[in-house]
Image (tube, rainbow, N blue to C red; front, side, top):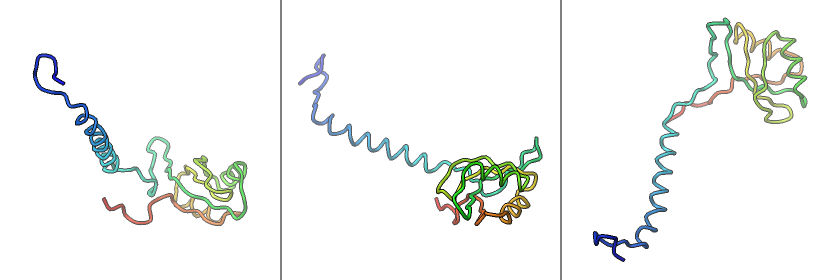
Length: 129
């Protein structure tokens, strides 16, 4: 089949076989770009200059199944601000911690009744990439 004006031929089969390959190449390029972007980590406490508060994402595991009111009671008992990010298991929550001193707050949370473990939400090994 000739294109209008006689400038060459249009081979529909050749064009259709290139579309999936171009889509795959575009997908790989987008994935490579996304992987190359630095990811913000919550491992180190970020100090908020305006409020004098540090903020850190933590994972808290309770000794028994806990609800949001248990998290609120823990926050009140330890004098920190805790916002629920997600609930991984009936006993495990991902929380955003806000306190004047995150290290002292972590120690208070670890010593609270009914708490099995408190850890910063961070990678355990350095990202190689």
